[in-house]
Picture 1 (cartoon, rainbow, N blue to C red):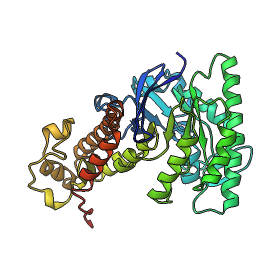
Picture 2: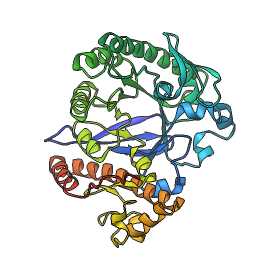
Picture 3: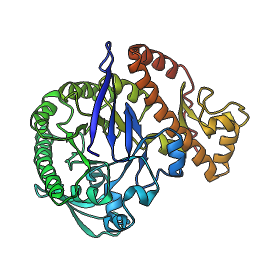
Picture 4: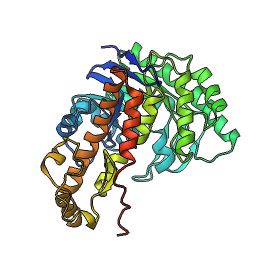
Length: 384
């Protein structure tokens, strides 16, 4: 099945969109939030639990899977879907961000990125071609082109050089996919990543070349890396105004509920982030009225569910008092139940956003959501 995207509705008062794309592993309705399964696992949760929480697509990490267990192992096991027991669609990142954040002694050249593995110090080289080959070997549905992300703040010249290199790498990645397709491989969709820092001019210059390439979708890269929410939202609005309407738009690494609602209003179709489940494993969850630090002693006798408006398994069955007890006792079940709520909450929020677009009331939905979210519980984490 060829990758296809269909735009189904546009909100008249905002730039919010509703659509769907088709993959070999099913359809995905947008807007969509993608839980992150870094090493072919959404931490503490089974694939069935992630699916039952409403997820139709998840993200897996190319860098981590490339280093362990290795592409050959995943291919021998029948591909990533079979290996991890996940029946839905999978998007894999290119590995570039992890090289930047995890690898020691990295060196970036036009050829690619040379680095030392964070696992054993082995020398590795990730090129645009290798990134495509690795993702093809994993059997992903949507692959990402290798890009260069510079640490911010950075001199304008460094940001421009990274954007130009990203464009050159994008051309090489597309060429490699075409080569694979001539050999009967390379069936996955391939998205290009727009860079250019946090200026409209820089990002426009990057997309003037990137947008002319035959990518199946486009991603907004290099945002939510310390520039501040207001600037990030401005760049999202700018990029979505440039991106073609007939292909999906993916905002990388963003997963706060407020950001999801605001970015959908500006035209984003897909998002992912470890934030909801990482926070959940540490005893903090997002609920409809804000952020709840359930491990705090204030909830030791609280008979309410995490979120009275949520219908996830955790909220249907257990109290805040019980969750607080699990975290205080160091029980793994606490992390599992909180993570289950976290996935359900974010996937469900994206689904409600979609329904609002289809109903032609996204502006009202956004206003109602923000008023409720900022009205409630924002207890700070315990100092311990």
